[in-house]
Amino acid sequence: MISSATLIKKLKLQSELLAKSFNLPKRFGYDLLATSIYQHLDFDQLCDSITESDFALSFPSLTEYQKLKYLLICEVEDQELIDDLHNEIENMALRLEELVIINISKIHTISNIYKLFGLENESKYIIDAEHIELDWQTCFDSVQDQQVVLGSDLLINEIPFRLIATKVQFDEYTVDNFKHSLNTSLAQIDDPSLKSRQEKLQINEYLDWLVDSCNCFTNFESNNPDQHPVFFKINNLNYFVYGFPLAPHMTISNNDNCTNINIQIKDTSEKQTFILNINQERLVLDCMFLGKTCEGDSFFTPKNQWVKDTVLTHHDACGFPIVFNNTYYLLIIRPFSHIDFLENTL
Image (cartoon, rainbow, N blue to C red):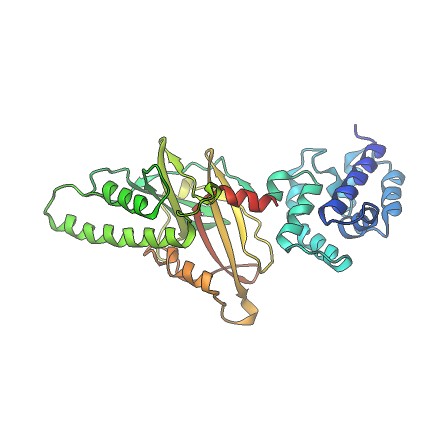
C-alpha cells in the first residue's frame, strides 16, 4: 500500500520536473505545481490535503477528490484516470500559461505535463494501435503484380479513413529512383481489352496523385536520413502509405470488423502530429488547424492548401475539412519519418 509520505515525495519530484521543463528555478516548481496542476493555494496546502485525508489507507479516498486524483496515475491500474487527464490537461496548460511566461508551444506544454505523470507515449503523441488488424485489398486488376497497390480502411474517432499502400523498391532516396520504382512496379499485363485500357488511365491518374502527395510530404533529397520516409512493411515488403478521411458517399469496407482508434485532438491552432503504432509499424496522422467554426469559413495557409490540392484530391477522399471541438481541421495519414519522433520528443 502506498503511503502518504510516498505520495508527497512524488509531488516533490513532479515539482522539480515541472520547473526543469520550463527552465525555471527549482523553488518555483512547488507552488506552480500546486496551483496549476492540482488547484491548491500553495504546495504546503497540497501536502496537507494528502496527509490529513490519510490516503495511505485507501486509494478510493483519494479518487473522491477531483483535484488530487491524477496523483494516482501509474500507481494504480485505472484507465479512467488517464482518460480524465486527457480531458483536463488543456485546462492545466491554460493555468500554467496564466501563471508563468512559457516560451514553448502549447503542444509542448501539454507534452511536458504528460511527462509529470509518467505517460511517456502520450508525451510524445504516440498512439498505441497494435490491436488494429488492417485488411489489405488489391486496388488494380490489370497490373502484373497484384500486390503493388493495396487499400485498407480504418476508423479514427469513428471517422472512416482509407489507407493506400504502394510497393516501392530502391536503394537510394531520390525522386528519380522513386519514380522509376513506380513505373516498373505498376507495369500492366499485355491485355488489349477495353477494361485494361480504362484502368491504364486510372493507374496514370493514381501515379500523378502519389507523386504529388510525396512531393508535399517527403524530402527525398535531404542529406539527413532522419527526414526520409520509413517504409511500412506489409508481408515483409516495403510500402509507402498515405491515407485520408473517406468521402461521405463512400462506404467503408469490412465495416463490422473495423476497429476504432481514439485520438485526443487538442484545442490549439498548432499542427498536431500523432505517431500511430500499427502492427509493429508506424504511420503519422497530421492534424492541421484551419479555424473555428464560429468564425465562419476555414482559413488555408499555403501549406494547408498544398495538402488539399494533393493528398485530398484522391477520388475516394473527403474534399472538405473535418470538425472536432467546433474547429475545422485537415486530417491526413502519411509515412513516418524519424524526425517526427525527434520533434515530438523535444
